[in-house]
Image (spheres, rainbow, N blue to C red):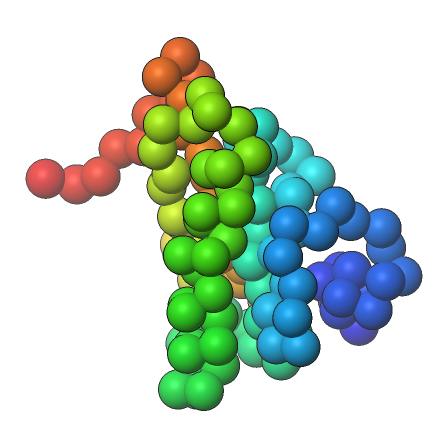
Amino acid sequence: MDIFDKIIAGEIPSYKVYEDEDVLAFLDISQVTPGHTLVVPKKNVDNIFDYDDETAKKVLLKLPVIARAITASDAKITGLNVQSTNGPSAGQTVLPSPLHPIPCYDDDNLTIVLPP
């Protein structure tokens, strides 16, 4: 049983942002910015490559709902990045690979560099 299975099962406490029968979103213990959330399917998949169509639909259709909840939680949030690392070369360090909605603030000094 991995750490997310334990969180889903309630064996490890978490601050839930959203939950339904298929998806759990909870605050990341190591906040990149305030409100940094992890979104995981309750179905056990290692990373995005293992999502079947139904799992992808269930998770990705909830992402806008979760994003709106995060941004509604603080008027200072002016944007939102969604990040996911999949596979060792991409920096994935835990299984399964969660989606990371990360709130952006005008003064957060968070910089995400994308290739040109």
